[in-house]
Image (tube, rainbow, N blue to C red):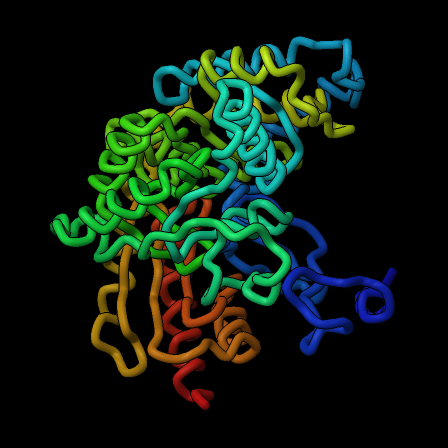
Length: 429
């Protein structure tokens, strides 16, 4: 198909995420990708500042990951997981247990991050019922979060400022504490800590679990918080028999500078959700890890009634094993630290710029928050003109690049962000 035919067919039939039908602005046609670059059908190349929604941490067409997929294709591409098992899934489960915070020993493989959260919710609700506390059927969280687009995950996204507020009359009503204040390095706020504890304690009789994104709230606003608040949650939930769930779908596998963001706080949740970077961005796969105690409780109640068709997909598990192998064999922490330094340097000139409310960087995450809504078409076009692919949203222009992005390309990314910010200012309503 020619690029024109692709765009015509796209406009006629394809519904893109978070977009009207047809889209207000035609998408860019990608012909191929290699390393950290996307090659467009018109011949332009863009440095990918998004890691394809934070997943492609090793970039594209990595020879080790390509080889893992080809090798597994020669064995089997898929087999049902009910009543059967295979080496890639067993190896992956063992590796995840080794890498995860201590105590997480059981692994449920699923096919997307949102489904991983659904599974976590089911685990928690069924555990509470199995242990004689069926009245504990609500979830606690703090505002500003995002946990996916299926129904129970939507119920613990921010109920007002989040993208799912229009479903407020349909979704289960959950318990919300205020959003954590400050930044990663901000001093602990004793008043907020007290309010957080009070919220959990007042609803302890009805809470099955508390679920949060540790350290970084992603699609809900790209906010960072002091890890101390995770320790507070760990203490108060444990004291009241409430399960603690960490959603590390965006932060897992090194993005914040530690393998999992929970390590910043030195605590282990009862349930952990991972996805996105799990396969290095090659195939969709996610996992929900839990303690042996939760697994025993759920099993005493019967079975965990969840079984995705592509659960434990051998191709996805094989490339996940290869992706994690690349991390463990290389200096991922040094690479993320280098990315962090480059983002801090490159984005520093935007502090105090007209229209900019805040600039923040943590690990391989760089965020510029504006004092107005981003003009998405104008900001995107400005970044593309600089040879960079970004996907701003709400009042945020941000980047989460592949870890192997070199300093020159990181400079291009920060220049692209500056261009997007300037375009947003020019087109400010």
